[in-house]
Length: 173
Image (cartoon, rainbow, N blue to C red; front, side, top):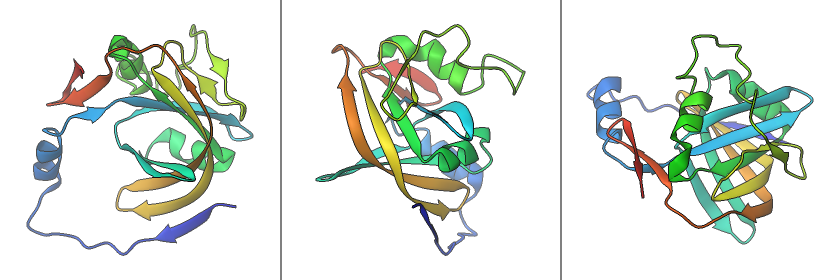
């Protein structure tokens, strides 16, 4: 069962949204695509706000903008897969970020050869690793939902450089 816990907002009048975004653009973050499939449908989106929370038991978190079309789908399905991207996945990251099409209803999975996790979430080709997660809880914080997932299975792919996003551009690391 998913618990939704509201967190009190502490707005800072002295820091603007643009200032905050500019400062955060200077932080290098790994790029991932989070996917889901289930009763609420299939969805996927590019994220950089992802982190390990615990290794025993293995728990991760991912932050999804509440205005994202994928937000409610992820919550309702109750499962998701974190696809950890390699440096070769820049175009795929742009596709799932919605940068390659003006059509918001475009099927981002069209033409991709995907596998499925045990939970049924799409696994994208060539990822460095994938984590199949069961949604444990959700916290609504500011503009985002923080989804905590219990890792149910992991598949590791080839070793190689990862994809990071810094200064509003992709880089290999």
